[in-house]
Length: 101
Image (cartoon, rainbow, N blue to C red; front, side, top):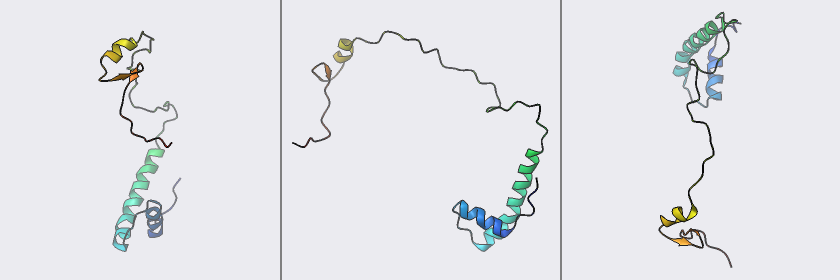
């Protein structure tokens, strides 16, 4: 599974993909760090997990929402009674778009 040593060209390539503008000192400093990160990632891949069921969350999640049960809504008259202005049985709002004639 090992890919071989990580070189400065690899760091430059990854930096280009990530749209990072690294100077030469940063490339030199990041090369061993990237190699170490990839070594840790390889260790994670070596974990014997054949008998572990894949999961998307470490804890069992339970649906915390109530069931969606239809219920009667409010009467239109009651809702419109609270409106500042009503026009033809609907909320009246200021016009924000001009219409061309």
